[in-house]
Image (tube, helix red, strand yellow):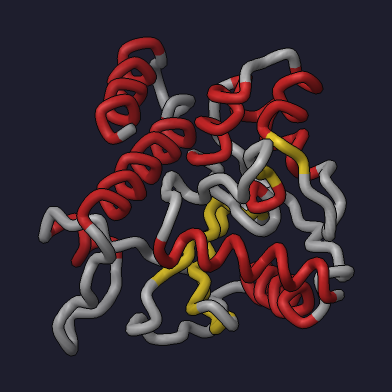
Length: 218
């Protein structure tokens, strides 16, 4: 995934001129950083006084993400990124990261919607999204959004709906940048719970189990 993300970035740079390639390039960079974090583990906080600014992160060559808000959740913490009034990324972040108050009106709206869902899964999280990905990935993500809370679909179910393959559907679920709102946790294997965020055990699967149980309860 990391290699593919940078390859995609180079393709964008070579096929676009002017500023038109900046937004999709940003998406490839963020996917690459997310892949690195999943391989190497959570990035530790910067030392006291260093701050979380983009300049500090890039000057150190790290993949420290800059969030518009970080909120508490029953299973840990959620980092939120937005751009131009749309959600771009939802990350499950380490509990040691400090909570962060929303730094825009729209980020505050996202926080309210997520907290409402975490209290009652029947509350829809209806927000404008910036989903950057291939045509196939976007087809999968749109299919996920149509799965009602409290229900699940198999990778095969989604594949048949969009005329794809279960493996390709699983790949698109793995790269979903906005979990919970684009509910990849509602996609399961035929006879098992399946993976989550590219993992089949550990904290990632614990989050998937919590989300599914939460939706069954409410």
